[in-house]
Image (tube, rainbow, N blue to C red; front, side, top):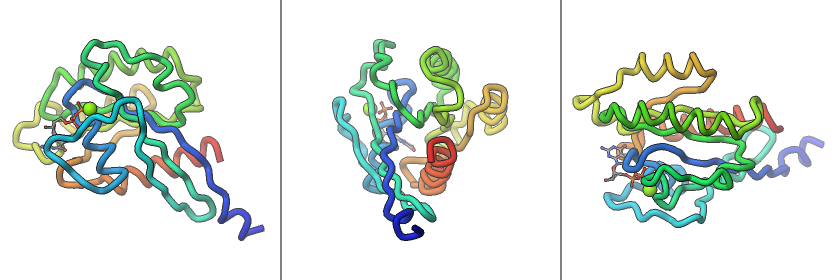
Length: 177
Ligand code: GDP
Ligand code: MG
């Protein structure tokens, strides 16, 4: 039975949301291949994958990135339908992306069934602390108010990336496992 459990693989749909330029494609690439590129090509509609092994289950994460539609504020609900996890990304060095994240959140809350989607607020570009426009406390307090998880990370340096991925995997498994 233990063996059967350890062989179990669950498919998880994880979507990235947030304003253009916050680093969604860079995070997807970092999660999937542990790479960073200055010009991360946006993969239209497709997803990247990453396998995460937990104690008695394997999660196969399908990491969905937008094709840049967020520029026109028109990400279709089809994009995040059925997602077990949503990463709501802002750039800590650009306040407007933090404000915008709250609008994305409203949009997302209209669509998802509470309790079934793990929503994670991610303050990306943590390496740009000298240009910081959003404090850690503000990020944390928005997350607390709305019942979200919160992490500051950096797709560029890789800081907190694996920790974040593992934490998401654990939460998702708690929800669906
Ligand atoms: P997207 O539009 O949300 O997909 O954002 P991209 O992944 O295309 O990134 C936008 C720009 O921000 C690119 O020039 C990236 O190289 C840069 N970028 C992404 N992540 C980071 C990060 O963690 N730190 C810094 N300093 N720049 C980043
Ligand atoms: Mg992109």
